[in-house]
Amino acid sequence: MEEIESGDKGRVTVYSIQGCPHCLQAKATLARLGLPLCDVDVGKHPELRAKVKELTGRSTVPQIFFNNVHVGGNTDLQNLAPEELQKLVTMVKEEPLPADAPPLPEKKQSENTAWDSDHEFECEKDALADLVGDLKDSDVIGTHRRGLTFYKKSFSRDQLLTWLHKNKAMDKAAAADVGHKLLVNKYMVVVRDCGQTDAAFEATSADTLYRLLEDDPSSALNAGQTASCSPIAAAELSLLLRDLILQLFSDHLSADGKSVDYKGMSESPAFERYCELAIQLQRVELLSLSREEKLAFFINVYNALVIHGYLRLGAPTNMWQRYRFFNYVSYLIGGEVFTLQDIENGVLRGNRKGVAQLRRPFSKTDPRLQVALPDAEPLIHFALNCGAKGCPPIKTYTPQDIDSELRTAAEAFLENDDACMVDSGKKEVHLSQIFKWYKADFGGTDEKLLKWVLAHMSDSPKKSSLQGVISAGKTKVSFLPYDWSSNSSH
Image 1 (cartoon, rainbow, N blue to C red):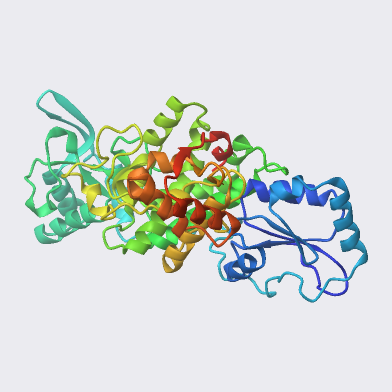
Image 2 (cartoon, rainbow, N blue to C red; image 1 turned 120 degrees about the horizontal axis):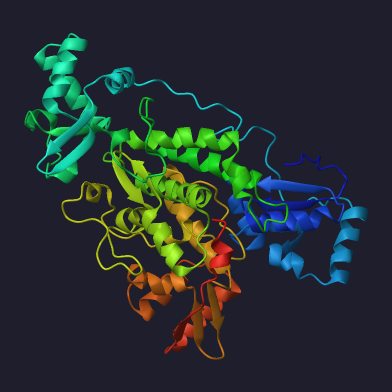
């Protein structure tokens, strides 16, 4: 942010967040005017969110002020008549900054910055990491046959116990305890595809086959290496991941906010650090998370994983590619593989069928079912998507404020006309396809859906119009075509 003294000079103030294409487009337009520009990141300064909403009546960013005159968002700026824009430019150049100019943050380092992108990722090494390294270098790991199938990079329970006894001088009880810890801490997993179950280590038979987690075949984008750090708290790890990839995304977004240099992003040293950090998701503890921690963790991880998926596979451009992308792109989290579809429909929607899915993501015996929320949380749909004309003023989600953050994201989404349009004359309401795809989450009927939308809109003329249309009865609900292109950068 360019620091500007609030002396006599006029200024343009832009409230934005990192990685928001609409904010960048607005700032690129404003930069060409040659005016003093003050960019306030409300992602880093959430204490200003309420004041900005009070001044503008809107929850989206960007919000733009010429001195104390509120222009609106990026679309409003681009649609200004040339003579109107010239008047505003002259005012900023010639008139002093009024006392009621919009506020700037206090001059202090934001406490909300969870990650410095130039900072090397350092961690405390886990006590079992060196032992796992020695096990990898031993001759214990090999190919085992069960029936007609050969299982590569596997070892039996007996082989592990014998190796711990001979090479690490452990007695029977100590070796069994280490085997138990390796399983519980997700360093190793049972080879499931040969009919074995995930029983406790001490309850398995001598010839039960195991693999190191990194050797278990997986297409997850963070698989293939051992997470050797002491487990990092899930909420903290998801904040670090989301902040780092958003910083990367912002650094490689074009000045006009219209394109992303994914090739440059994937070759950046900061992306290597991101990948190191993503590996630590493998052993994160999920079962003890509260509802709020789960929501913040999985929303942040989902949004980071989408960008990671674009880097590895490219952004999907048609319906079939999108279906494959969301069912294929995955992370190994807490010893289990979660695709984007698993996170959205399995965890955050309480294990409900997604669009074009024939069955629920998790079966009754799936260990991931224990992580799923007890019911669908409809507000997640606005945290996992960015509106086409403005973004929610939230960069990463936190367990402490998750409910108010999600509500703000919904308000920001509904302010966009490509999410909700009210035609009072025709008694018709046009809503985003999201409400059609996930109608069950919003009550299941048009009537309940409209009530939900009304309850989650911020006070505005649009809300009053919707209230009037609903009160008149027999409202017609239709769904707007979904603009995938506007979402391709998120």
